[in-house]
Length: 277
Length: 203
Image 1 (cartoon, chains in turn cyan, blue):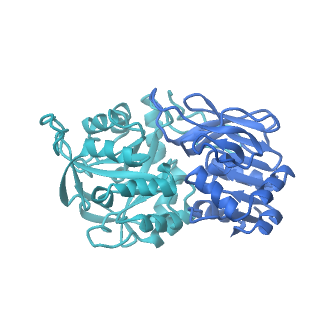
Image 2 (cartoon, chains in turn green, brown):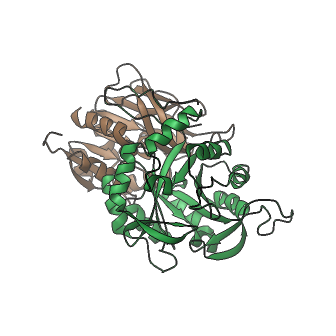
Image 3 (cartoon, chains in turn blue, red):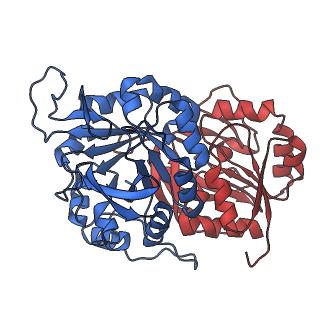
């Protein structure tokens, strides 16, 4: 296992970072490029930018926001929101994204994942899955929601009659190199990640999983790692200053979770924060 | 860079996303240009061969722009050249990803795939600790960012190896004077990557 990646998420609307609860009631949290840079300095392993209103309002993700973040960020940048096809993805990559997170468009046309992987490589292609539900198997027929989780799209506003775990497996078979797995029921609630969902998806895919929705503490993150997450995404706890990335990493190391230590120019890696492998 | 702008030329053969590479060098005070012209590739003071996507497509793009000889010659003559990710793989003789497709052949090895299973995720996506062999002067020890499904495992004799572990030992990088191949992405490796790029710019 690699050190778990700590990923601050910037939900962007009209060029500003916003945050809501269960995808609603968005409030202003700041400038995306400045926040991204600050998180990198705190030790963020990657940054995710999601244009949360791109799909409902039919807009493409703001390329200028991506370029502004890229200009200041020297760790990986994943961008999602409103990617309708391969040309949208190409434009985002050209503007400075390293990976694109595809959601609604991949459900409507799963071959999009295959096309993206063929053109840019699987390592560029993230299947972003928003899951509704709280677990509990409802039968064994492979019907939507059989895992207890069903897929929702358009920033959580539309149900699509698809089982979330089955879709994760399908998305990987079609070319996704990573799963960004968000629990809508947990989003912004700070009640911890949806661990049953993580375990269920972990059992069917080999690619990295990014846990999203519900983080309030390093303990929640450690739980997600034990449930099979390779990376943990969080927004509220970082934006509102409850935790710095640095603080989260030190706490995780104390919980026995391996995190990436900071780099010092002396050629030595810092010892603090280097946890169990 | 204490005010001394350095010129860096980045090979651009397709619509591959180069923004991270370009902004990475710009942040270090470099003037950056892109090219797919064999004469410019041959003459560049410092050349970066980036690469994302598939081995065969990238190799075809190099051929269609007639860049093979210019790349091979500058690498063999020891002119400052940095291959990143697929750019390093293209330096090898070939890749299991594309059987029958010849690489540039300046690195005597064949790129292989990670074996999935045993809890190892493929692609390898994230930060891993790289350890340079004694004598390496450009690639430091530290955590570097990887996003790859294929890698080299054996060190070609005339190159200094930089090792890493992921489902077994593999080559994180190679260096021979100012010619460097990195399987990871220095431009996405934060302060570690900046330290590496600074050393390469001064090599």
